[in-house]
Length: 125
Image (cartoon, rainbow, N blue to C red):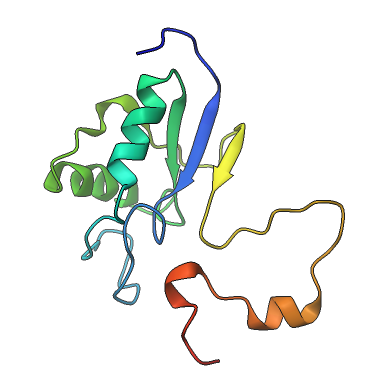
């Protein structure tokens, strides 16, 4: 375990931690299991001195943050060491299933029109 603070890792909830198999219902309904390895990764980040912030489109909605915390508890992971900000925090990296890593070149419209997150890659448009 590291005592050194290394910055914040901001992780999206739906599609990255929560498997998000079923369609969106509302901010407080989180029916699916965790993505394989999510809890282990989060714990390793905390143990290595990172601050972990979980952010989602649920974060600013009534009951969304409480529902995410409860989901962690329901899946036997104590969320006490995790931050749940209502707005996207400054971070050293953002881990998101719908992100695009900007490297100085804008994505093409073909890329935008055909983009699918990893867990929806086989969905037809």
